[in-house]
Length: 443
Image (cartoon, rainbow, N blue to C red):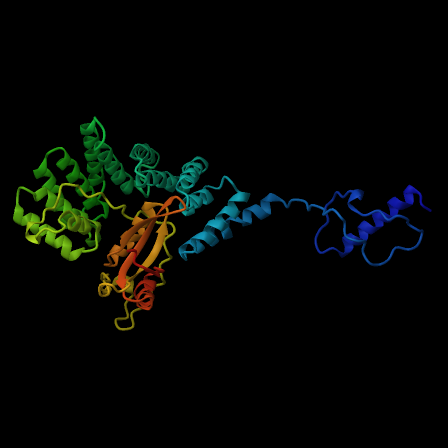
């Protein structure tokens, strides 16, 4: 009874029994070669137990794309955003990369990979892919702006200008219109410093700042920043009086966190014209923003000189990258009624929080600082610093090299012990959604 016909019948019956005991559906097509062939089959009843498992795994049929793929993007999107908002950027990047493997042309995933990637060049490539895949979608819009911002932060102004110009062409009323106009103007001013057609770039920069002024209200965030840019353009062209008027107006309207570069600019515009006003502006800068880059510039410039003889210098302050609309910002906490007034806190007047920072320990004592973030892109570090400035804090930016790449670290305060630093971070920073870690102050 070893005929081929009986051998085929036994294998077929074994497959049917295996199908009955399996937990999931079996593929429609199966090859006999997938099952082990016994050396000899006798004409006896088959055992009740299923046949031995196949030596070669049977690849399950791919599920219908309509059901599985339609349900996947929603939880994946929420999971990635949730991880990023919690500060778990490595986990968010891994989840995004996994989702992108199954949907390589998803504009949202490409945008998130660009924002989360630790490699600058890779980040820009993801933005380009998101622009191509997204069309006129919000994801493509943000990617177009982020690409220009990335080039600006990298000092590639000649690449930033066409990105911002294309953004303004495609999205004339987009969410990033104000920032795009502002950075377009600054990119023109930056290029004017090293090109023979300097006057043309200064005129272009002034034109973009003026357009931003025309498209904003006096109480808008970017209105005083546009005045600052206009003042720089006028000063570079030799119109010191026009520059002074623009800078003074900007100082009157700018929020507190944006006044340190304006104070230095205004002081420089008074140099050689009004010495008393120059000194007054420098004193305001040093007393209000002692840890700002502008204050450090003054201390370095006048190192060893009598304070009464300090000068404001002639290097126009570079603009810090102000925060743009952040799609990864922590979710706002739910409003809780005030137990004393019974009013919703959103209806109360906002008060600037200014926690006191400890001073450095005595000379020779090892000091510590709090590190709040480390970024491969200067733009991301500047955005975090701007958020800290809004709380009345004075963050510092430290730069280091890691694996041949430049890393921008946002740090805050000086503490005698790591325990003191940790306690300050827990009580004063964590309530504002900032995570921190004590680290020794670099010598």
